Every structure is written in structure tokens, then in C-alpha cells.
Length: 491
Image (cartoon, rainbow, N blue to C red; front, side, top):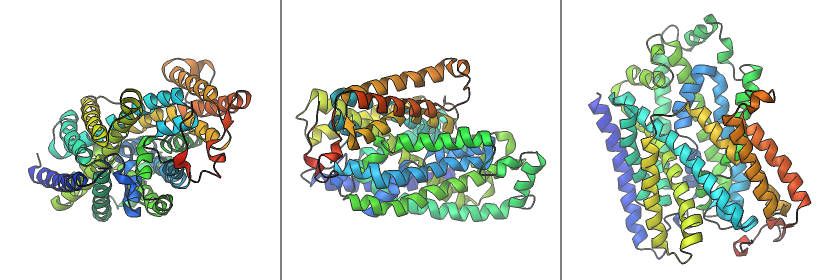
């Protein structure tokens, strides 16, 4: 066990997380409105930018891409490119709408557009899929500790889970944002230095030797961003669609946008968030390809080869720095993945259905309880999960129909009936596509779930919205949405 590295990593995380958490918690006690969920909507550009970038940069971008690059090579980079597209969409459209509507949760936006029944449907499904993402983030934390210490992934997830809960539980959204800002700087400097060291350490001619390995194995496609036509259609395009049409309306990504100072803050954040997120995936895929090509680490398999290569190839001080950085990246996503469903439960279930008069302190207490419960449950199943990127893409497919319903409801027509039936039918199809032989029966085996939910969502949404009664689009009735904080919930 590498006690020195482990001690350094834990010391860094505890000092930053607990130190800033206690500082902001103390500040909140002096304020009339503590802003646990949205930081009083005061986050500046830099904090919003790195929080948006790191919220969708965690286990899938690190260990997911290590795994995926093992199987499909450089085509895995499309997962990172998909998130760049996502951030463009979020910072120019959905994030602005969420901030403009002055909402606290995305199901609350659904309520403003369509009413309470669609709100509850989206709240339940969205909270569930984000919790699914949380379990994958827990797996990533477990892999970090398993690599450094030799303990099991399950035990590593427990240690990291406690840190992840502290990341958010002490001071909420403000703590997440400012801890992210520090971690982002530390992470990128460490990653760049590690890439330089690894380039010098690679056997067999450096990166040329890595390329030669795949060429000799008759796997030259592993070095191509395009890969094969099949990979381009099933993985690359499927990933872009699932990431963009789910995460751009997910509470997990929209909550930092809701906490921004203004819409202008979100627009400016794009120029930092997109490159911070996009470049990271390229680095990780390159390291994953190098690990598979190295005979020393190849026998360890896709989950452990990449991280073990870094551990054994870099000097101890850089290993500690890099693993603290990777852990920080996973913890940042863990924090938002546990904060988001807890917020949905507090706002859309507890306050909406059981205690409409809930105070800020009531919301904070319920959110903290939900954070602990969700975090413990996610850690409990972290070591028993499927390949990370495949699981993520399956989870993302659920929200694709809701994206288009929001578009229709904001700019075309609001129909409660159309919204409910479109979601229910699309979700049933998604379940049938996942757990029955339906894809084989219709001759479309291997087609990603997102194609099914996206097609059904658009087709049903357009037809049902057109033929059912409804009201004008929400942003059409207020001069393209200015002053939307005064819009009331419709039923």
C-alpha cells in the first residue's frame, strides 16, 4: 500500500473540501437566505464555468474513457466531443432559459410549462437517472483508491463517498463551485505535467511505438477518430445525441446555471467550460491507448491498466498530484450528482407536495438528509456495475423526449396531454428496447436506445401537440421570455 501517496491525496482533499466548506457554511449563517441550493444565485463566471465543465467531467471521462479506449480506441474521444457540444447548447439555450425562469429545479420548469402531472413524472425519472450516474461516479472513486492502495473498489468507494458527501453537504452549491475552481487549476496543471512525463517514459519509441502496436495487431482503426462506419453510427453519433439531449435539461448540469449571477454570466462561461472539458477526454484516451499497448499493464485489463500505468511510471510526487487531481474531478461530479436528485426531492416532492411553507432551513435540512441517503445507497452498489460509458449512454436516453417537449412548450404550444403521453410511451419503448428481444424482432439489433427515445419523442410530441388542445408557448407570451420570473405555474 502506498501510504505516502494516499496520505498526500487525502490531506489535499480534506483541506480543500472541509476548509472551504466550513468557511462558506459560517458565512451562510450570517445571511438572511443561506442559498444552500443555489448560492443565492451569485456565482461569477469562473466558478460557473468550471462547475459546468467538471459536473460532466468525472468517472465517465476518466475511467469510462480508459475502458472504452481499450475496446474502440480513439473513437472514444467522441464522448468528450459530445460534452463540448452539450456545453454549447447549455450555455446558449437551456441554461439561459433555466436562469430566466428563476427556477430551482428542472421539474419546476416542466410545471411552469405543462403542469403538475408531467412535473412529477419528470421528477421521478430524472432523479432516478441522475442517481444512476451517481453510482458510476462512486465506482470511479473506488477505482482511484483501489489503484493507489490495493484495497477493493467497494472499500475505496466508501472512503471516497464520505469525501464526496462532505464536498456538498457543508455549504451546498457555493461550496461545490469554489472547491471546483481550485480543483480545476490543480487538475489541469498536474495532467499536463503527467502527459509530458509519460511521453518520456513510454517504451518502444514513445507514441510511435503505441501506434505500431495497433498497426501490428491489425487494429489501425483504433488510432482513428472515425474508427469504423459502424462505430461512427452506433457509438459516436449515438453518444452525441444521448449526451446533448439528456444533460442539457438535466438538473445536474442546470443547477450551476440556475446559480449564476445572470444570463450573461452563463454565456461568458462557455468560453472556459468547453475547452476545459473537451481537452481532458483527449488526454485520457491517449493514456488508455498507451496502457493497452504496454505489455506490463495490458494484463490488468481496461478498468485498472491506465491508472496502474500512471502509478508505476511517474515519480511519487507527481503520482500524488495526479491522483489527487483525478479524485477531485470525480468528486466534483459526485457532488453535483448527489446534489441534483436531493434538490429535486426537496423542491418537487417534499416542498411541492408535503410542505409548501417550507423555510430555507427546512429545505437545507431535508436536502442534507437526502444527500446522505442517496450517497450511501450509491456507494453500496458501486462495485457491481457494467462498463461505465455504456451505462451512461443508456441512462441518458431516458431524457431525450423531454428535451423536445420543453422546446415545444416554450416556443410552440403547451399541451399537458401531449407531454404525458409522449413521455410515457417513449419510456415504455426504452424499456422494451433494453430488456426484450424487440430490437432483433424489428431487425434493428445494436441500435442505441437514444435513437428510439429521440425518434418517438419527436414524432409523438409533434403529432400529439398539434392535435390536442393547449396554450401558447411559455416564452412566446412574454416577448421571448423577458421578465419570466413572474410567470405562474399552470395546470
